[in-house]
Amino acid sequence: MSVVHPVATVANGGAPGSTGGDGTNHKLDVSIWRGGKNGRFVSYGITLRESQTVLDVVTYIQRHVDSTLSYRFSCRVGMCGSCAMTVNGVSRWTCRTHVSEVVKDGRLEIAPLSGLEVVKDLSVDMTGFFEKWTRAKGAFVPGPGPSRDFAVVSPDSPQRRKVDAAIECIGCGVCYAACDVVSWNDDYLGPAALNRAWTLYNDVRDAGNDKRLAAVAGNVGCLSCHSQQSCVKWCPKHLNPTASIAGLKRATVKAALAGRL
Amino acid sequence: MKVRTETLLWLAQRLSAMVLVVGAIVHVSTNIYAVRGGLTAAEIIDRVHGSTAWLAFYLVFAAVAAIHGPLGLRTVLNEMTPVRGRAADLVALVLGVGILWLGWRAAFGLFG
Ligand code: SF4
Ligand code: SF4
Ligand code: FES
Image 1: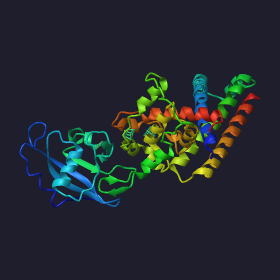
Image 2 (image 1 turned 60 degrees about the vertical axis):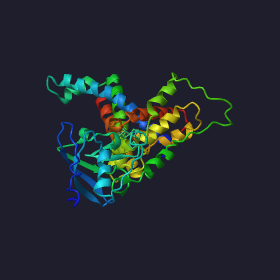
Image 3 (image 1 turned 90 degrees about the vertical axis):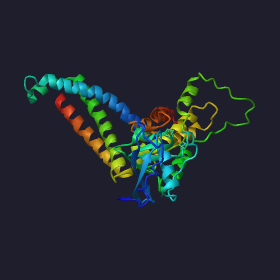
Image 4 (image 1 turned 60 degrees about the horizontal axis):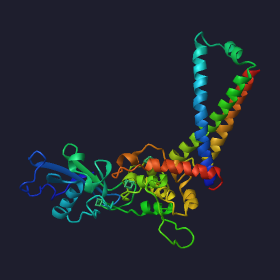
């Protein structure tokens, strides 16, 4: 159900200088999810300013229209991974998504990230997402004995290159929300946790790979990935979790054949 | 099911797929070739009767089909239906044995 918020019809004061890209004022019809799991969309009419991001719009509404709106953000520059939401049906990092890229017929529908429990409005509980990083053995395991010197890892070594390709994850959960297998298998570890496991699998200093491979194999892990790459398509950091998962598939098969699984 | 077994089944499905692709191409192209003059049981028997090469081919073909299909179905059942775990294993096993039995029976029947 969609309702028009009583205050929402008030535009942002017609703010002088608030223009669309072509110098004219653009009205924007923003529907925002309000409440918990059984909430509803509420419409807000605002005037779009030039170069506004989706996060700017949400912040504007929270500051000027309805201060009870809950959402989460931190860095505003694409580093912290806390601002992901579903925008016009697609999961996005909102601080780096310009309204002009995603607006459809002057409308913006902003919902919480799917695949996670809604806390309130646009904030979701990320616990399940990060618990899966733990389950995928996403923490570094030091080798036995104290290290006496720096580990020298050549940037050109094949393993370091594999780590480089996957390491820039900001933990935003966009891939997780976009993954079909996550949506139908509650236990599936998901692209981000598996991508993390792959970076550690290739970390020559790490000593936890046997347990890690056992954790990421099987039906909750890499073997359940359908390789259809929704995660790749929507990852704002342009990472390729599918390739990382394919690497884990090869590694787990080798381990199974060698009797190490 | 144990993680190792699950992984080996996954591998079996991939490997059987590779053999199946080659097998399907040979099977279908031979059929298309053979059907040109109309297909009769006599013609088929004429071609494959007593041929160890065709017998070997169809024994392998039926075996990989019996591995690949049921494993795929098992995954679909687990992902999409309430038939999961042991129940899905059982369905896959019965189907696999069934395909193998029918396939091999046909292959041996044609051989002689
Ligand atoms: S490729 Fe795998 S991890 Fe990525 S969205 Fe598809 S199923 Fe999920
Ligand atoms: S892999 Fe990409 S989409 Fe997924 S959590 Fe990391 S940065 Fe976000
Ligand atoms: S607010 Fe930090 S990534 Fe968007």
